[in-house]
Image (cartoon, rainbow, N blue to C red; front, side, top):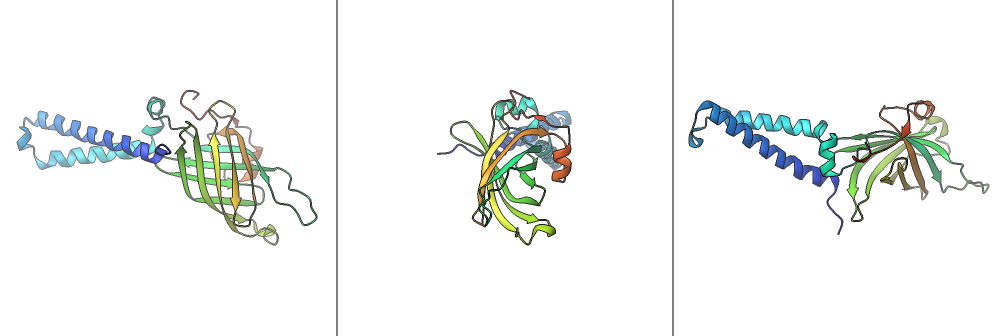
Length: 223
């Protein structure tokens, strides 16, 4: 059986931290107010709940990615722009294969949500659902379903379509992301993204031309 996904792991930790924060705030305020535990004013419960909610929000946006926190959770940090290439299985009517396609993906990541946008020179795809999965062998993979929208100038030969993709996250510097995809047009292929940048790019042209990329180290031991 597969181990819990990143979302489940983060949710369990978040709940425990929230309960701990609320309890600590409640106890501190009760002691400062000089009240017995059976006489704690309702406003103290309200303050404790508010502080816990703030703690949840900070965890979702920032705390989960701290190196000290990820040392214990093991969750890789994949947010940013990844650059590489796509190898398609499509064969043209004349029998010619498709050359490697320079490709970039932008990953938005919080403690419980992931969004993947993939760019090529001819199209852009946006994930409808994405998740980070921890396999029994210790590897992590990012899986997503997407809708691909080609540019108007190529729609005579490339229609809007849906697909799914999955990449494994390398455990050593320079391994990057590697995986595969398939579409409802009955095509598939391989994906490889060895380069990473913390910057966000909104087009293939800008990402592929940028010089702010380097080898990625998504795991806490290498960051």
